[in-house]
Length: 460
Ligand code: PMP
Image 1 (spheres, rainbow, N blue to C red):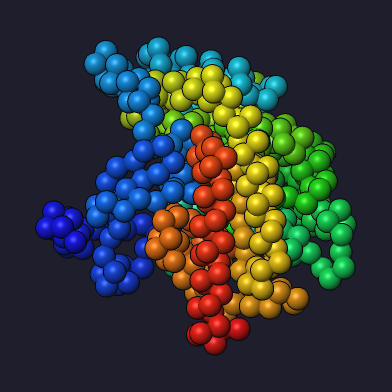
Image 2: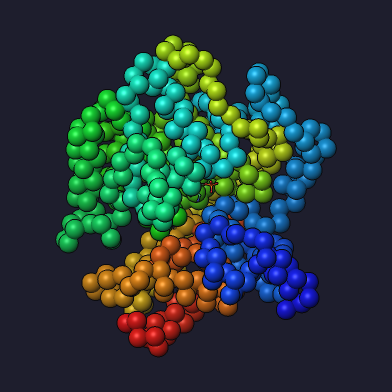
């Protein structure tokens, strides 16, 4: 270790509490300090390079060295580094980005509100929906439907929508009225012998029973990721979204698509809802919106939601909500340039083409003795490792083997992520055929080495 990276590591250990990191384990291992990026690769402080097959946190669409984003940020910094949009103020970058997003969005999503993160965006959605129903004089209509294993953020309210025990148990959540429905993942939650279509029908029936039991007049919205990401990369079963969209219509429930991961090409379509053929009333984006070069999220919503908030017939005041950095000029300027590049280079098309190559390559791993399921769509994939392939038995404890594979990944020069024992891949939209092939080769070595370790440890 160089003196410089050693002193950086010491300073990190002396001061930081890392998100989503076992603090005591971190004290033993120390940080992996990432110093610079180039295309789909990042380099650590020791000069080792890694293919970043997770795009950071599912987010760096354009890779780690897009000069045009740097220039867009610099130019805006020089012109107007900050202004807000409270009390009738506006500035060009946020106006132009709003206009661009509406142009790209599925039909009917004609309004935009900006926040700084996906969590804040989902908090804002909750508040918009509550405000809307108060404004419409139906104050009882406040509950959200979400799904177990769904990920919608970590603030008090968005963390309540998230359906993962770790985000709830020790934080005293949920703190808002939310009902979690069964996770639409056929491999894990389908009954023995149940087809995908029958599984989807059962989940839709469960959703309807829940709505009737709770009383439709109390259910405000259904929120879901079109393809579930952070909970373990789970595409929906066929027919699922059709059924959910129909129920929302029937019971006057707003349908919210959380596209924080899916949005802007991840699945090989501009938005995930387009892949699965439904149109939400509210669509939440972030991450790939700026390739995460700066923090930004955008909520797209319908004129119906806008009008209720704008008219605010039954509420006492204006929409008292917004952040200091709502629509931040530098972040929105970067977002605008980022979306222009995605269009110019047809990166949605590239995601579809490279996604096909990735999914085909991964399908070969289905025969590996350690692999229970390979799943995904476009440039997002999950490989679930299991103790017993025939019985789909998970490892006990869940996550130990996945974490080992994640660590071996670093040794093999591939940054992946494990959701329990599911290894996730989500490479930048700019990947080439050579990159995809290198990812596949490295992942295969990781799984082979993990398999050897599992056997040596007597875990199988
Ligand atoms: N929604 C989804 C679908 C996400 O994947 C995430 C982050 N992984 C969030 C919301 C929260 O976004 P943030 O981390 O920016 O708060």
